[in-house]
Length: 285
Image 1 (cartoon, rainbow, N blue to C red):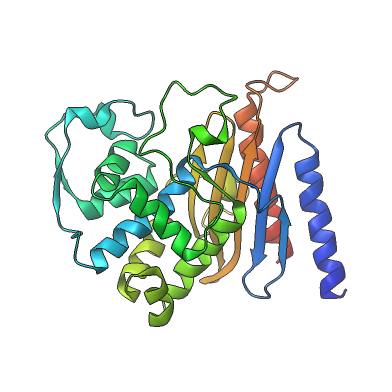
Image 2 (cartoon, rainbow, N blue to C red):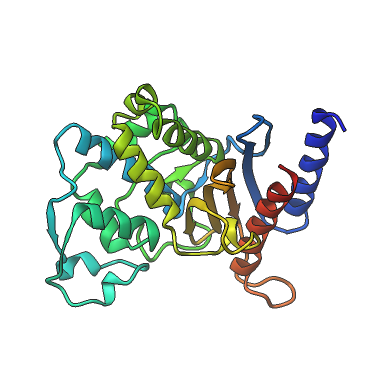
């Protein structure tokens, strides 16, 4: 089977998964061994939810590389940091705990802890993180809030949240992968090779197993960051096989109903849809 025919067959399977549900599914997948790329609405802006945290991490690491921040900096968990927070475990802990900026970045990424996100983001500016994304070419990514308000309606507008695109997320992930072994690529991100390796490992340490990894063998290595928003679920990451990056995938569901016609929660089917997309790539690439 020719590469073109094979890619067409994979694309048909991926689009069929998206077509099977009443909500919008946007995605971009790239075979990192061959460069084969398949997309669906990959350039359309969509709520980012916590997938935005990968770019926050990289902006913070750039500030570390520049000497403006330090990974060993001590941060005290204050009660105010738990306000308007709907994810993570720190909100349930006793204020006064002291952790490092390194640990705050890890908490932000591996548990999507929004207290940790505040700890990191408060050491940057919204304009700094947004400008960093634009400088990298992430033209469809717009950071609008430190933490989105909890009272958002399910039909909120894009202007009410940080937005991104599947294409932007895959591009960022590929830049981080390249920077892990290439000083020139690291310089493009404004970081060092060592900081890039920290970023990749932090993404690999993700403990939430829904979305991309949900239908893969349990021991599969995945460097990813997922998210949950009022309009859908999303996930973006790199899947490894035999120690090497196999494919990058970013998938964003949107307009997901609270309940499906059979009574199943919509978010369950949204996450299952992302898992099915990833499973197709695992089997085909």
